[in-house]
Each structure stands twice: as C-alpha cells, then as structure tokens.
Length: 451
Image (cartoon, rainbow, N blue to C red; front, side, top):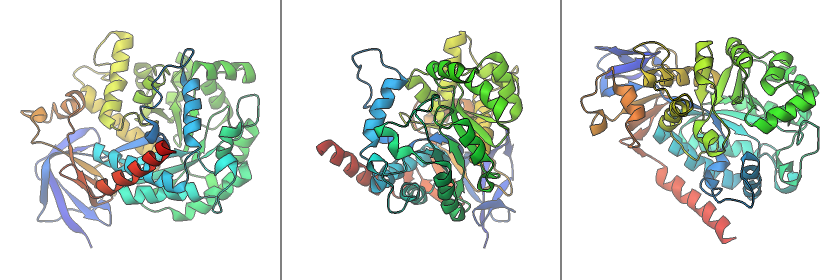
C-alpha cells in the first residue's frame, strides 16, 4: 500500500533543485508515483549519502593510536596497533560496535554503507562454528540501525607481494578462493532491498594474481560490485614495482577488466597516465580524506581526475570521523593546501563547490554500492535527508547557497530527519535505538579496558 507522498520547498535531484509542487510518492520502500495530499517535510531535502568504505570495528579504536612511538610513525606502525586491537573482537562485540557506528552514520546523513569486512575468524584463525558469524553480525547491526548495507567480504591470502604467509595477527582474515566463494554463496541468498553482497580483494599484496583471476571467473561474482585497496602508500607502490614491474593501478588496469563495477579505494599515488586511464574505465575512486589524513597517506589528484571524467565517492574508513560533511570538506581543503588555490572541485566558472562535491559523491557512492540510491526520483530506494532550516547556519540561504553552507559553515549538525528505505530512522536529530546502541557499545569497550 503506497504511503502519503512527501514534499519540500526544494528537492535536490541529480545535481539540481526541483521546487514548486513537486512531491515524492512512497511505495514499498521506493520512490513511486505521487498522489495527494502530500506531507510537507521541510524546506531543503537532499538524497542520503552512500559511505563507500568502512571497517566497522575500527570505530572503537578511534583516538587510541595518537601517541608517538619510538621511531617515526606511519600507516605501517598504525596497522600493528590495529591488528592488536582486532584480536579481542568476537561476533557479539562486532555487532555492538557496528550498531553504534551505523547509528552514528545514519544521524550524520549516510544511508548506505559499503562494509569492507576482513575480520572473519576466531582467535589464531580458527573458524567459528558458523563461518559466516562475523558477516551475520554486521548484517544484524545494519538492520537494527536501519542503514542499507553493501557487505564486501574480503579475500586476504598473503602478507606481501612476495607471497609470504600471513602472520599470527592476520590469520583471522584468511580464506583460500574456495572458502571465500563458499562464504559468498552463503550470503547471496540473504540479499534484499537493504542488503547487497559484493566482492572485496584486500589489495594486490594480499591476493596473488592467479587467485584474483580464479575468483573473478566464478559465476557467483558475476554482476557484483568489486572493491580493492590500492596505491594507498608509497611503500606499496615501491613493493609492487619491485615484484611486478609496474605500479599498482597500472598493473591492475593491465591485468583485470576494470570497469564501472570496480571501486579502487584510496588510489592516492597515481601518475598522470594512471589518473587518465582510471577515469576512463568508469571505476570509482573511493576517497577517505579524514582517514587518509590521519594515516599520512597523501593526497589524491582530484582536479586532474575530475577533468578526465572520473567518478569518485567518499568513505569514512577507520571512522576517526563519521560525517559526509567532513569527508567532503577535507577532500576540498586538502587540494587547497596542496595547490594554494580555492574552489578546486568546482571545475567550471560559477560552479558551486558544495553542489559539485555532493553530487559527485552521490553518483560514485551509488555505483560503488551496487544499489539504486542517491536520487530523489521514481524507482530509487526512498532515502533522503531533511536539512534543519531552523538552524541559524542556514538563515537567509536560498537554493543557490544551501549546499555550500551545509558543507562549509562549521560542525553544527544540520541533518534533522533521515528516511532510509521508506522508513524514518532519524526524527528531529534523534535515532530510535541510539541509547541502547550506545549502552551496548560502552559495555564492550569498558570490558576490554578492564581486561
């Protein structure tokens, strides 16, 4: 049975505002034909943002890796801290952490998350009685929080380009190709309008070439989104050059049929030729500016990629920030610091930086998620954000200025209400389960500290 349609003074759809008598019909969790009478839900309504890269368990360690070690700290020293932290997590812990994180995401304006999930097994790599236990915990967390989930179980086989075995801390991550395909086959029947299953190759250093080819040739992977970490660190680029005679993105484009199903996460260190080639594939560059800054990764060549026609999206990755506003703001600010120019993401005269970034991230995030989201039009899943027009930060703002003000006017939350899959998940800044989620999360973290 269709619900009463929704209307607003201004609806953002595919890069432009619609105004006047436009309404959004709701039918079984999707936007459908609009009838009358319509319920006015606000002044400014925009599509929910997809988060294309998440490691949910890392939310619980945010702020705990900020003390200097005995030498110079880097991604690689941070990784050892993360591995030690991951050793303590079981499926119940995972569910509590992910539920808290996903509630935070929905309140911030994310309505879909791509969970790049590699913490599969128990201590020392011993499988759980149900090998899908950790995946199922994430699925339940997303269901409780009311966020769409693209679950990307990760294939992780080796500890480096030289094929070295995984170390003791990495054994929880390991599958061979056969085990991994079995996991995918277990999860695929669970798919619905709020759950999509995809493929994640951890990285070129963790998945040998023959394993990548064997996996991608299997029927279960057909039409799935495919994600991979790539070219995040200079050390990775140097190791790939040494082992394979090519840079990571160069090698992948030469050895795989990279197309619009692919998301290359980070892709920080690109030559101009790689940037142009990647843009032309239709693959998504999965950018995580706050995590990339926190880890000292470097800066993506944004302007060159956009000018080449590239597609991008944003993710919160390690979750030292859970905010699409902050990801997009720092995507732009990093470029300004590097180039000493302003308004870098706006590539045409009079183009709005905020509008350009928001729309690009919607388009790329939807493609990376493998779900019809990111647009306020018939047939798409019914996800939307109602901005707080009562806030002084949006005072006297018309449609020309509002998205720029949303992204660049500070850190006061401006997402008042959130609809996901046709259901209100946040009303007047409040999520129905946020108190319970916070209590469960606090219990897990306090138990770890006590131990």
